[in-house]
Length: 327
Image (cartoon, rainbow, N blue to C red; front, side):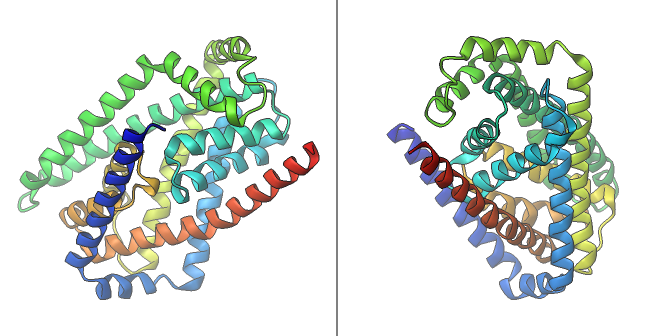
């Protein structure tokens, strides 16, 4: 990463931390903690278990796009998705670092490099396409909710329109830059995935092969959509466990805004601050107190640590073992 890019990430991270400070200060840290503690140990374990089940769906989506890989590999692909999220959320490597590390995980487990990279591109495309579809649905629900009297729709309307525009722009840019994006992943993988540079022609062939099979792409899209809905369901469940229930439709509307903010803040580890500020501004307009929304954000952060830290430790142990075997 160039010096100016590092400086940009640092400044964005500092801005995010300032936004988090503002959000918790506005809602009141004591009030947020009171709501968060209602989740309790049992509720938190259930919340984490729900997230683990969601990773199975995400792994199945990636596996669906990988030709020649049988159903017995589901656990491996789910594990690679867990590593991707752990690296992206907990390490200062941004989303791109998590993507490359997850690809390395599959290659070290014996999945051919062309299959790994080709299916990775298909998984990224279908994940973003399903996110776009869900975002449009969530924004439509939000517009209908805010159309009611006394809803404060005027305050949120610019955010709604802006979020939709950002998602459409990101999707269009991703599809247009797909070939260039593959080259970027290949250059990064040169340092982390053995043999990737030598096999770039094979990777391109594998990518074209994956995208020429519409059933696999449709399956990956459907599974990624189910995973997004399961993520919304996890937020809905956590709010109920914290005695701050919100209808599934309103939870969906709120969560798609947070998904959008996290996508825009992809360079900031865990989208720190951006998530909290989004909850603070949007949740009250959907009938959820800011302190309850921030308690949900804290629960998500705690869940990411509870799942991500052990995942990173296991990943590091596997990397150390691979180094010892090579020596």
